[in-house]
Image (cartoon, rainbow, N blue to C red; front, side):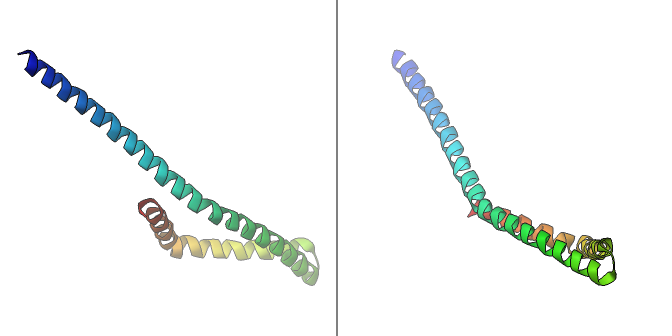
Amino acid sequence: MDDNVKLIESLLESTFKYGVTELELLKLKTLNKTSDVVSGLIPHAVVFFILVLFLLFLNFGLAFWLGEILGNNFYGFFVIAAFYAIVGLVFHFFMHKWIKRKIGNFLVKQIFN
């Protein structure tokens, strides 16, 4: 009878150790995937930030230039704002699903590769 109790205790202890090991493995796999995704996104974020700065200064220059042509600086800013309003509406109504799908696919690829 004692042998059966010791065998069951040993089995339960092994099962517990297996569960703990599986939990640790899951934590490590999650950490690995998270670090892969974040490290893959950081270079894209840096390039995006530099591109945004470039476009910001380009738009300021263009707005001042158009303002000089139109006679007042704020007219140039109005023209640039109207252009971006039109582009924003086009993206919202016609390309929203496409952009959402592309970003979703990119994230899924980063997670599962």
